[in-house]
Length: 107
Image (cartoon, rainbow, N blue to C red; front, side, top):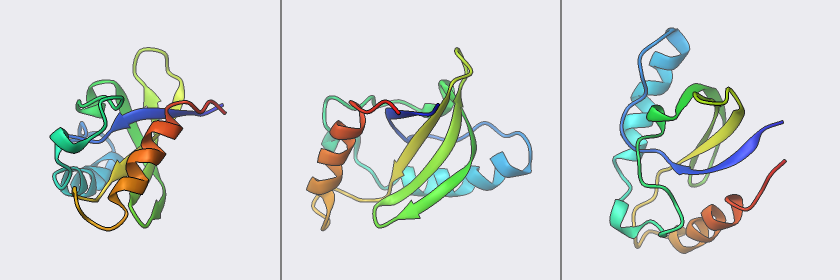
């Protein structure tokens, strides 16, 4: 099963195979647009590549992209959502609520 993660993307993904390198460029570009001071306190503010191996993009939406990833400690598969909104942009408040809701999900 896959768990929804409360992590938000910051930093860069470790280089590996071609798929990871492809994710690397987009991951860095999107994550740099998010102000860490504006993220809800319930969201972990750290580089997810220290805990997860991003495997591939699962899909894109209005607010960013979701990646399939593997927890480096447990090998559990998780979903990491990388948000591409800045504070004050249309949809910002909605995505903050979605982040908090996703932290409570387990499927």
